[in-house]
Length: 265
Image (cartoon, rainbow, N blue to C red; front, side, top):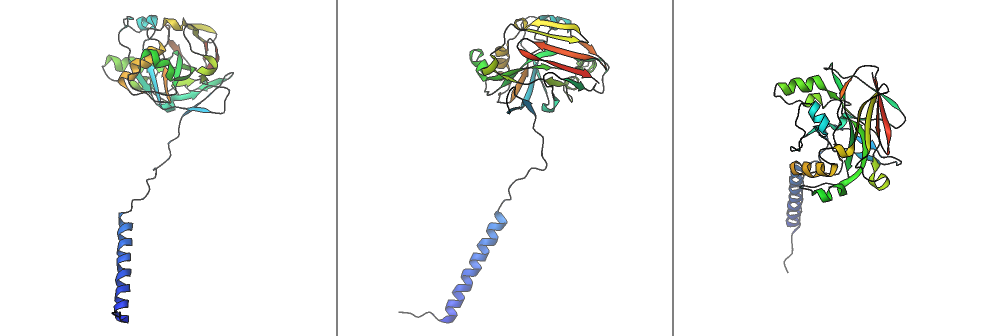
């Protein structure tokens, strides 16, 4: 049996230490630090009626000219041409609690600020190429909302063949009430929707006057974009959109949902 000298043992030990140190340094050099957000972006939520839960908003979709009379007043053919959609940023949401008249600042860059009252559908799930027959299965609930519009900017940019997003997408341009789950309130089809300014009725229609139903909107929209839980859809406004000025009070109504009211400040 060969005996290992003290010097050989020392050499072996130093070699092992060196190897361990080298591996450790190599691992540290190759290690990737955990990714950290540069800053926090606030999430937008809409309260759910009679619940402590809130609905997280992923995207806001809006359909244009979805009532025949409104399409005519906007200079469009109200036949069933393919629907078109646009988006608002999620922080366009301005929550309006039932029973309150919430201050709504008159926005910059406009002298022709319009109201548009709408039924809003909130999705709990989504997908691509959703069939009309299954579309309402993806709806979590409904709310009453306003699509506020800088009409002069929208028209000017449209006339110039430029995107008119700035006329629709801006701070607080999407006032909305609480979301009522389908499980509690059911679906909507023929209910009356209306809007008054300073007590005078300006808009009034029934939901069955929509050119494209909510189910059809979901189906058509899913052909263009994959839909997800957290998406909400403003489903279009009746005819007689019009301007408001500072001091005006808007009151929106939809059968089976609480009123929504804002004051232009």
